[in-house]
Length: 419
Ligand SMILES: Cc1cc2nc3c(=O)[nH]c(=O)nc-3n(C[C@H](O)[C@H](O)[C@H](O)COP(=O)(O)O)c2cc1C
Image (cartoon, rainbow, N blue to C red; front, side, top):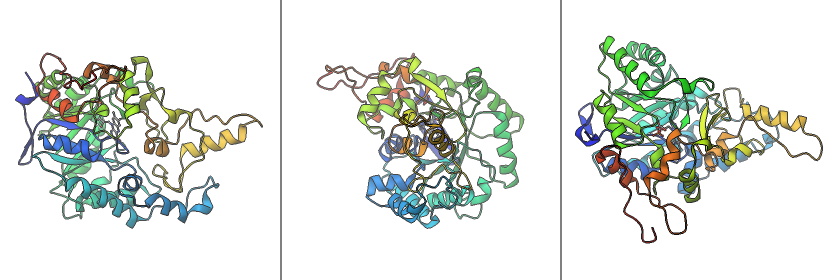
């Protein structure tokens, strides 16, 4: 039994049932998403910090323009007035998404991972603009992640593509799903797919920091399948989190999944956005290096390597330029932690901000090394080179390994010359 025995049907289209999950601030790059699309699967790009991403990719100046606008506020812990210009938000979103979807060549699709917790000091309006601009730019699907904003469908119900774009939701419990579906039923706009993310995933987790380890993906997946059966709803279910081999994936497909979503194995692909040196840290990680903590300012637990430079950040909050995680009213728990550390520091002492990190900067600079729990097994997926470093596989190698491998075997990439 292999993944290739199955197909994902979404509307009239059929796909290889492999979805590469969104990995924020350009870890799941255009190139990574396009690799999945070319091979008939589904690739995600993420819309976290698109203004910043555009500046890096296209030389625009969204961040510096915003910083200049609010330069007088830089030393003020009150960030209430640091708002995004909605026209600029839409422009950045369109630019980035058009750049990606215009390069499609395959039979797969490109979806947008839309992090609803990216509150941008004006949660509803900025989300509305981001989603509308994504649809205008021709995105194939919108995956609503991290946050479960129950008004999200309402925000876009007047958009001409509301019923044609594919819409999916990421949930970690039947409870969250049933709440979302109530609203969706009222609008007569059910999602086309449901991603069930378990506690071993990378990024933010939809569990509490104390009890995430008491849950497991298989149980939640089965509960979701049962629930949909009871409700007479035929919506494709896509499990995610810790699916490491093609056989892990095929077992879910045989148990009723319509596809699987995977991410960690692709973090070390040539196409992923992390710097090459950071990819080596991922491959060298041991199980003890992979921790779940509350350093993220979103209030959700996050999994990351303990060596992440962001955990030692002591920088002044950078909300005038970035500010993507400001809650309405300009609040962020990193600003509070930073102020508290400043006030309690004795003269001559180094600043120490243990509890929170500036995640906007950490993710933008690839200093927050978030990963799934299985990252410690990445060394099984590639070749060691003569100098002790690891070969970085192409996304295609990883994708095809998931699609065709048997018996939990992992096919290594063709060795490079010095492997
Ligand atoms: C480096 C990394 C970054 C991630 N960033 C996001 C994100 O921005 N938004 C999101 O919804 N999920 C994010 N995820 C979760 C993935 O999209 C995916 O659902 C999950 O990691 C799959 O499990 P796996 O990594 O064990 O394969 C991230 C995962 C990783 C590994």
